Image (tube, rainbow, N blue to C red; front, side):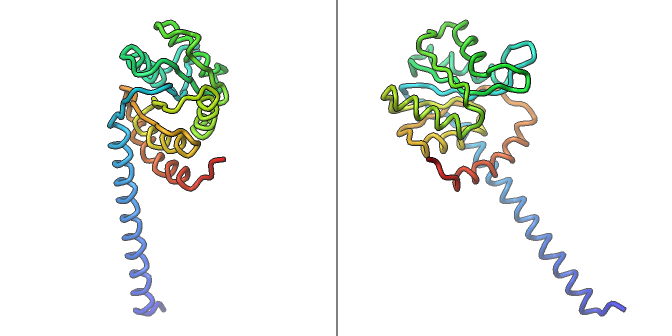
Amino acid sequence: MTSSRSIFNRRRIVTILTRVGIGSIGLLIICAGAISIVGSIDNIHQADVAVVLGNTVEPNGKPSARLQARLDKTIELYRQGVFKNTIVSGGVGKEGFDEAVVMKQYLVANGLPTAQIYVDSQGNNTYLTAKNTARLMSEHKWQSAIAISQYFHLPRTKLALEKSGVKAVYTAHANFFELRDLYSTLREVFSYASYQMRYFE
């Protein structure tokens, strides 16, 4: 027979766990909100180079809507004279296309000079993009970069670039939103935290 003391202890444990769970969810939402706000406020300044982070290429070889939005923002800022050089960074997706090559083709077709677009086909994730960008910037003696990606991705991208040694990092978000961004923003909380703790060589 279960004693009243045992029942009380179980209820107390359940209450504590429930409060911890609710508190954790609240903290997650607050952090996601902070990432959304910070990423949505563009910090656009004259830069030596723009770094555009890759995303899905459709089976027909064209940039996905999300990736095209990043490229369109790049074109917009280039035409405004914000930068002269561009790094397109991505890997080969499951569709079989090199994201960086497709990105360069799109930019060239829209007026950016091919000689000033640098292709990073090894940018399979944000960490590698940051490391490869830092290397290219060092080779060309560039000091400042403007990162272009989705709003929720920019705080982590900026962090990665700074930890990789880029001295001045500015940001501009793509003008594109879809419902899955809500999930992506929540996931980004954990990704950002992991990059905070990650060692950058």
